[in-house]
Amino acid sequence: MVFVALVTFALVVFLMVTAWSALSEKGSDKARPATGSGPARTAAKQETLEGVLVRQLIDDEISKLQYRRAMQRLAEPTPIVIH
Image 1 (cartoon, one colour):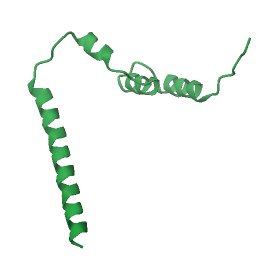
Image 2 (cartoon, one colour):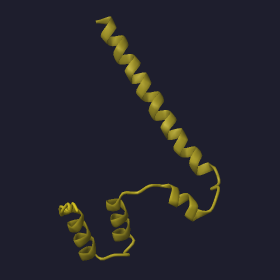
Image 3 (cartoon, rainbow, N blue to C red):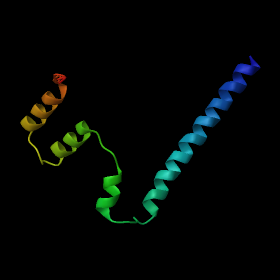
Image 4 (cartoon, rainbow, N blue to C red):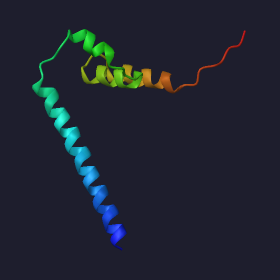
């Protein structure tokens, strides 16, 4: 019983330390000034095609119909052609 209590306590402490360090890292990002140019920083971040489509939909760069058609084309299987 004592062993279970110690393991539970250790897990709780581990989770608290992990969450605290993650939150402090987010706060320190806001405090630091941005380095480098804007496009270079965003180009380094990789995005999925679905994520790009959602961002374009939210930013009103594409319509809902265009979004649905693009997602439909992504979901359709592509035929494999072997020459």
